[in-house]
Amino acid sequence: MRILLFTGKGGVGKTTLAAATALALAVRGRKTLVVSTDPAHSLGDAFGAELGSEPAEVDVRGDGSPAGLWAAQVDSRSLADRSWHELRRELHTVLAGAGLDLLDAEELTVLPGVDELLALGEVRRLATHGPWDTVVVDCGPTAETLRLLALPEAISGYLNRVHGGRRRRMADSVRRLGAHLDTLRELLTDPAVTTVRLVLTPERVVVAEARRTLTSLALRGIAVDGLIVNRLMPAPGFWRGSAANWLRTRRSQQDAVLGELRDAGIRPGELALVEHRAGEPVGPAALGQLAHELYGSRDPLSGNGKPVTPLLRVQAVDDGFRLRVAIPLERGSAVDLARVDDDLAITVDGFRRLVALPETLRPCRITGAESDAEGLVITLAGNRGPG
Image (tube, rainbow, N blue to C red):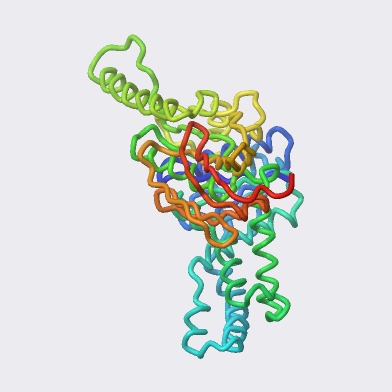
């Protein structure tokens, strides 16, 4: 099973590219489900078909014959209406039994992001209970997606803090939620199963957000296997006239932005380029043409050759250890490090993650930090242990 998550700033074309990728996979013989968690729900528009919350086969060939492609749009509001009330009632009982007064218990059971969390759980349900080899997820815009991908860890930590980690004393539904969150976190952080395709357009504001997204995803331990630059203006060649001059100027600006991406350490082979189209690609035929431009004869699951690097790597040195944290950093990024018990709190430009330190490093103290092309390098000194 492979899961591909497509995200990007609103309006960059991630839904269309997710649909084209799913179509390309199905044409190559893989049973594929493409599912949208984006509240805007434009996946049906991309296929030119009506979609519901349960997977339906898409008529790719236009003759009603099976093609191995299914599509669905997750209705997170409906999921919340069906399943959250019972869990909230039991969680309220647990919190009140833990010594909180009724008002505090009531407030604490209003968890932010429940809709998104249930949507992610529904994706997992569909992925694990269907006949599909691959699930392509059209996520919401990057800000919502980052919040969505952070929820399993955040809410799992919330439950542990509320009950001191003693889940065996929790109500059955709360305990099931904790186990479900652990499973979601494992699914998202396994690069052999789940990877992200980040879609952007060649504009400085969009690229800046994309680079921050790369940092945040790295902090979460979620692998990015490729970046797709969409809506690149066609080169006007030797054309003349005002329209050609406009195209030449616009393409020159876009090439400068691509150059900035490469200067930031993103290699040309890690970028897939898709030209702007005169018409909106709607329907299987247009999506198939887009998929051919995007992948050619390559396997759509292969990504763009972007290597998956472990978040943490430890090296022993004479006076202690070096801890390398593989997160992309922009020049001028605001970085803060702190120890929280056995965890290292890393904050980069407002994105914060508690990272469990390897056991060897827990007795050590941080003595310095610097950055290089691969991320952060933290030096630690302290008890080296026996030998």
